[in-house]
Length: 365
Ligand SMILES: [Mg+2]
Image (cartoon, rainbow, N blue to C red):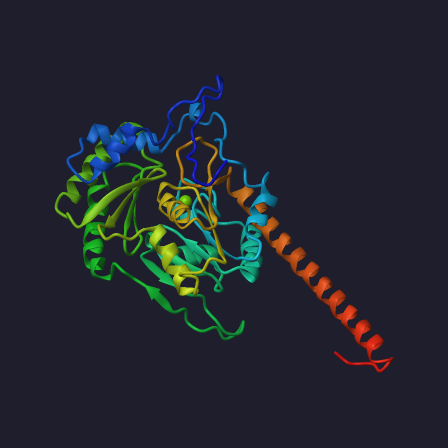
């Protein structure tokens, strides 16, 4: 499969190609309408489509090549280039859980990401508030892009005992802070009557989680959120996995954050950089798309469900993400050991050559 190919989903039983189940033309149309005069019922259908709960959706993995099966192909493509890692958090490093405040990553995953960051510049890119995602990950050496990339900070530098404060690199939506806080207050109050609804303040954006809301109440919740946003045309509504996202209308997303970070790392116009972005959410598609457009690196979609995507490879769940990251670490370690061995062999050859050509007069190298 070439990088430019799009994924076409297939019916699990018949194998016959069918339109991708999550991003059908109808759903795409609904997304466009979210910011306009979309009817609540249509919106609920869209919520259902983006938040599959029934077993029938989990029919098979999509036709993206599984990243673990084509690992050598991936590392071969990166040869001679600097890998830069971009990792979504929820559903990528941590499992999706009912309570978003308890989406902890495992110690094993943390240890793997720490080793990864020892070899490659690594950034966490999340829709969450930057501080909150940092408190989950707890690794000072990483870059963090919170609020869908609208709040980016660099790593803490210095010794283990005396780390510097992280530098804030980018906050393109600062002027929206008072408005976001205001809408957060209103939504907190208005969603009180919807059992299971949870409003999360992500600093530069808001999330309304409906994972624990009875599906019969989705319509009511959609109506509440939509009626509040009617008075805030500078905010827009998008959807993630069982979550409604409220964001400023500025043209900034995870793809822009990826480009900004590459530029900050000095790779703006380089051909020898190889970014790898791993994510599970629709919002990660912006980053996958940027990689396709740049024709650099690739995206890896974390999903068990067939869907239309700009990613190039797939992993099924966070446990597979951890295996993939560990294999990258192992591969890099082996590469460095091989390089050292080869360098030593080369130096020894040079020494023998000089010894012979200088008639036994040893030349120190
Ligand atoms: Mg995610």
